[in-house]
Amino acid sequence: MTVLDLLNDDPRKKRGEPPLRHPEKAGRPDAPILRKPSWIRVKAPGSKAWAETSGLLKDAGLTTVCQEASCPNIGECWEKKHATFMIMGEICTRACAFCNVATGLPTPLDSTEPGRVAQATRALGLSHVVVTSVDRDDLDDGGAGHFAETIAAIRSACPQTTIEVLTPDFLRKPGALERVVAAGPDVFNHNLETVPSLYVTVRPGARYFHSLRLLQRAKELNPSLFIKSGIMVGLGESRLEVMQVMDDMRSADIDFITIGQYLQPTRKHHAIERFVTPEEFESYKTLAYAKGFLYVAASPLTRSSHHAGDDFAKLRAAREQRLAER
Ligand code: SF4
Image 1: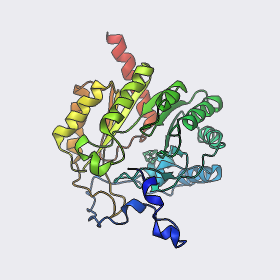
Image 2 (image 1 turned 180 degrees about the horizontal axis):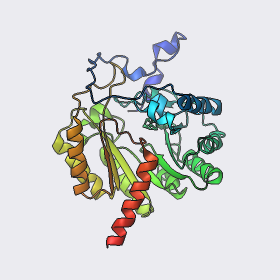
Image 3 (image 1 turned 90 degrees about the vertical axis):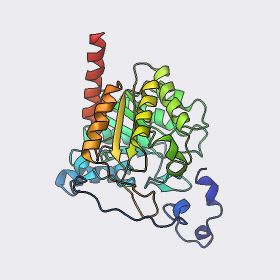
């Protein structure tokens, strides 16, 4: 199901009221919000450098997943002038139970956006840029062409900058993945988000094996591409299920896994089942390396794009070392 299925019957629209941020969640019962443990501590936003990043992004009229997803790392990242661009608008066509990005009917694509992302990449001095997007089930190509134009604009404006794309699953969009890979990003990232048994409640519009196959196919299309994927924990998954996802990812030739704690955006979102301890994250990291990943980021505050530039440098070094050892 996509949110597009629900919009025609929205009574608020008929009454002329502004749309709800998550119309598909309005009828859900409130879930309790658990108190955060001591190890979930973040830097408060508001430093001078943070304000400069915020002003630059505002002036450029760009959207970031840092804001739209209420990322806990925004204080730390924006102080370092690291931001993750979210292209193709602020409204997503899926109805994932964990995500704080607004859902509804998206706005038309803005042809000036790829150039503005490229200019902001240069103005922020990013040596590695992460570009993600909302899901655009309403577009024939799922937004693949807009991703390709954004990659091309960044390459032209910032030839030294490495580019990581964090894409939707392009479900039922033939040719979309091929178009993005042909545009030549350095890292192709698509998050599996959770274990297969929780897809029906956490990620109902997606299909686990489709997402896994998307990642595998990206590597087949360009074997030199770095492939990255991540999951959240604390949603109700078991340790064995996480281990199975790691095995599935390695079978699909994924190089880099990220594992972070799920944090519940509102009472209408999926409840946190528990807070995974820092020791358990360390254990997941050890396991993932043992299973053959080139690089692993696993901690309570790990997010796909957290420290993405530093991690990319380590990922590249790890591949070179592994090739040298052959
Ligand atoms: S972790 Fe990613 S999404 Fe979160 S603030 Fe940092 S760059 Fe933005």
